[in-house]
Structures are given as structure tokens and as C-alpha cells.
Image (cartoon, rainbow, N blue to C red; front, top):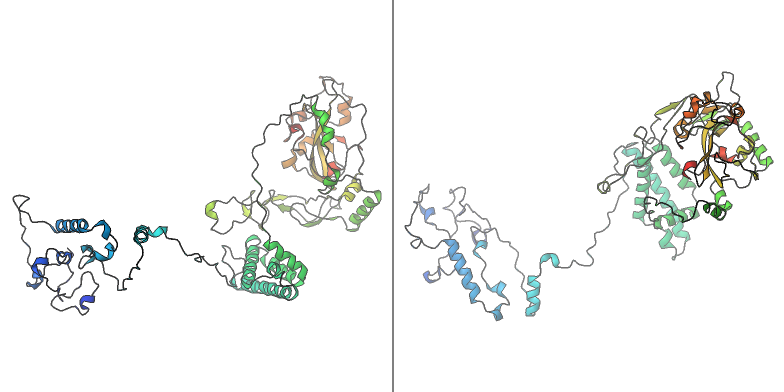
Length: 553
């Protein structure tokens, strides 16, 4: 039984009367008395507390504890009376009269005062007259099983023209707001022109809504602030200027790309399986003539299937001379001047030292928990710094690389490798059916040049050639991290003429550099350092061989 916290107002009637909803009211309540015959049958009387204690003088006297010798002498408790009453009500209900039982049965004692919680003031709704089966199924159906209305769709969140919050704000809220409004104004201007010019059939695909343009402006501004915080102002200004100069046709093409569905991500490649051709080693070279690559397809990716003419090479050489040999650094993107014959101070390049990141930008891996957070910024794995930070590695000189076929032909002309009717034999006296090779490149005053050549026979994989090559230009950087060639290799190398004059036996003088191993193969140098022959293709200077390693072919 719940007792009140104070008895100071028990002599005063409750102002709310029977409408009082308090569980333990500090005022007194008078309950009308019922006949003695119905006193035990009514559940309300069971919940009626005794008021004799309230009539006594304050404070109330302590009730004396009563003991019984046997259980039969003990009167039934309140819980026993409620249990017996509910059992009698259930037995009195017939199966045919189950309809409307919920409205006919009196509420349980737990819903009455002073133990029950406060009742709601809302009026109960009357149950409509429905068939018995429908009423029973509806009343038995759980709340979670009811169907939600069809139009209960959560509306899209409408955004306002206010810059989104990011972790590292590059320019402050006020400045970003100015750029965002200028970006939105240009988008609205272009969208208005498109709406006035296109027909009604094309409008749904090229005309944007106001909310879509706000979202588009917010996305572009946030992208500039996140990906390029150090040059945020310049990038966003260039974007606004580009929209001002953009034509209606270009804007329509851009809008169509927004509505286009993104291409699905390529499936992850599994570990490559071992290739089993089912052919003998002598039969595999017979298939090579049928595996020739299309020259037109290769030309689209920078290969040179047709050598440039001498006139084109002369024009490129004249252009380089007219520009004063100014180049763009391949590592730090700085402008510098190249001196092929060294300047008065003996330097090969201008512009001082080169500070760069040896590794490229990478995107950190994301997990399911990161989807609700802000997108992660790219960083350099060499120093774990974000994009825009200065380099972590310093080199003495700047370097450059050219992919122009004309410039490459001006350094070393392209030629078609002639047929060899009498190819050399390997150490076992056999003629290799096919040869695969791998090239290592280094930076010189002419760009990237060949510094090491490795050739192996196919499909046996036996070594045929592994030599260092003296480039035409002065060496600036051997790119040792990727080529595996270091300065001591060239310093300790034996000239090709000296090596060739030694007798072709196992008693040839062994040089310490022969024990030096490459990063791409596991065989020592067989011979070292010779001039670049005319049979070498200029594609060796263009870039590395498409094969990952000659020994892996």
C-alpha cells in the first residue's frame, strides 16, 4: 500500500473531486458506500483503503502484529480475493458471448485508485459493429503488425544556402558563405537561361530545381574545402569564373552527367590462377604470332608504332632551344632550367634543391562506421601528411620526363629493329625461340634514359643479357629506389670492350659488381657498361617495359 508523504491536508476535501488523477493525493476523497451484500463482490471495494486510520489523531498509531496458529484461521488476503474474483468472471463468460467482452468486463483493480496510474482524460472511442471474426482478429493482431499508411514517406531534408561544417575550415564561415552565394548565383543564371530556351520535353532532364541547385553548390564548395584546403580560395574562384564563361550547351552537358547513373565498381580481382596451357615448351612459341597487339590500340596509350619524321624531330629540337631548356619538375612541379652542358658554376639544373613526396597520394580505407562521418582526406603514405603539405624528401636537382615522340626522336632517332637471321645462342648452345626484356630508367639531362637492360629467354626463363647502359645525357638521378641501380654500380663497372676481350671461359676475371643483385631479377650482372647501340629503340627511353620483370614472363 502506498502511503502519502504528509497528512496535513487530509481533513480538507480535494478541490478536483472525482476528477482528481493523482496517485497519492494530499487531500481527502470520500467514496460513496455500497450495500453490504455487494461489498465483497465489487472489485472497487477491494481497492478501497480503510479511512479509520485517517480519522485518528496525528500521528497514527502503529498497527499491532497479529499471528495465527494455523493457516485455516488466517483470513484470505487481498491477492486471493482478486484471484478468485477473476476466475469467477472467466467461468461465467460463455463462448457465444465473447464478442464485446472487453467492453463488458469491469476494469481490473490495478486500474483503480490509489494504486493504479492516473487515467487519461480522453474519451474512449466506441467500437464499430463488425462481424465476430473480424473483431477477434483485429483485437488479437499486435500493434507492430499493422500496416503503415502508403504515403508515410520521410521527406528529403531541405538544405539552406549555408556552408557545411568541416573539421578544418580553410577560410572561415563568412568567406565561405560569400563564395557559396557567388557559386549559386552563377548556377541559377545558367539554369534560368536553359529553362527559357529548351522545350517542355527536354526540361525534366536539363532544368534543375531550386533545392537541387542549392545541394549542388554545397557539394562543390565542400569538395574544394576538403580536398584542397591550402589553395581553397584560388580553386573556388576558378570554378566561379568557369561558370561565368560557360555556355548553355556546356552547362546542359554538365547537368546530364549529374543525372547519369554512376558506373558500378569493378569486381575485386582474386589471386591469379596458375596458367596451364597444356602445351610442351617447344610448342608454346608457335602461338606467339597469333598474340600480336593491335598497333592502333597501342598508339592511343602513348606507344609509337610509326616513327616521327625528321622534320618533326627538328621542330621539337628547335622549340626546346627557343624555350631556353626550361622544364617542369616531375617530382615537385616547379619550373627550372636544364643545362645539358653545365653552366658556368658547373650545375646541371637551376632552381635549387627539389623537395617532394616520393609516394603518391592515397585514400585511406573506409569502414561501415565511417559512412556517417565526414569523408577522409587523402594523404602521402611516405610521411602521413595530407595533400598540400610540403615534401618530406629533398634532392639536390630537379628532374623532368618527356613523352613527346618528336623530342625523343631528336635525342635518338627511332628505327625499326632489323631481322636477325643468325641469333646468338645461350650458354647451352641453343637458339632461344623468343626473348623478353626488362628496362630500368634513370633521370639525365635529356629526361628518362635507359640505364639497365635485362633479357631472358622464353619460355625457359634463362638469362641472356644483364648489363648497365651508359646514357647519352649526364646522369642526374639514377632513381635507385625503383631501378635498383646505385652510383657504385657504375663506378665499379667493367667496360664492355674489356669484358669482351677476355676469353669466353669460366676463368674470366670476376668483378665485385657481378655480385650486385637487382630489384627485379635474381641474377648477377653478366656484363656491364657499353654505349647505346643504334639497334636500341627510343621506346627504351620513353618509359619502362610493359613487362613487370623479364624473368617473370
